[in-house]
Length: 377
Image (cartoon, rainbow, N blue to C red; front, side, top):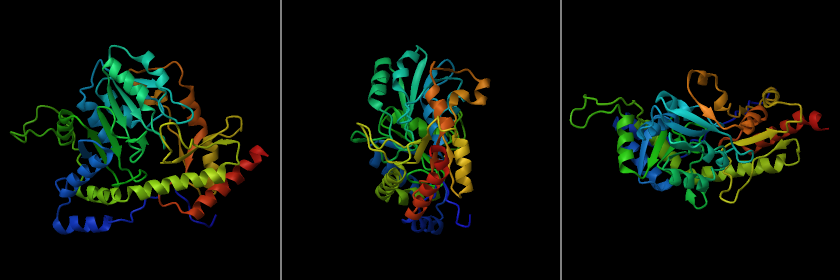
């Protein structure tokens, strides 16, 4: 192949990123103490509809601090979808708590709320609801469970900034929400994350935990351990510029998704993402496809074929309940986790970053048709 490789993601930096970064350099405010950090926090909180925002170094850091801020520890259990990234269980495991894994729905890829209540015990401390790929979790049933049992809700909104659940923005639900600003997210700071809450006590504790738990009265006297999870002024400057163009980014994501829908709709052997549900329209953070299990082709084999055509892909999540690292920890799970296992075997997502152009979309579509033709003819 002579054409350029089409990566699974290409970010766009076409706003005031350079201008704001130059301001950081010229003024010397490049650490976490610069004014762009607080401005970014305030603007994200306002956009999502939260009272408090705490910027951190990445999305995993946001989850670590969120779990720690709720005093989750030994003897506690946390209900988590098995179909998500391992970041969601880092601090749960390190705290000594027990993860309890739940399967996902096959159409939206989100946590199967029907399995949750049967897994609740007196030890259940929290549920982590992770919005996956482009459609949000159906939150109302989970919120009802949390309210009934007095359980904390941690809303992982890493992939879903700008999405709405009914008419309310994702990231505004539950006790605490988290964001990621990795380059493949709706807006990016390169690396970066954020914690959102309406609780002043939780907000204060999160600020302390992200900053080594320095004491207010005597800075270098520490009563507990935190992390150096601060976001730099340079990162926040990029994030602020990105946030100013988030509506354009969301429009572009939906355009990419709708274009793929049109170009790939004639292939019966692959399942395309759901365009909408009763509570949300897909923002197509990524464009996931699932191969028919009867096709005789795995996602891994399909990805290898696309790579030979110069096209990047990313596999679906490897189910958390199957992760080898769990052999060192206590965990339990629902009796049925077959959906997430099947999705890993037959699902992947294709190039869908904001920098993807129409010509590249056509190339990806044509290559998929060419690769699958022998399997469906």
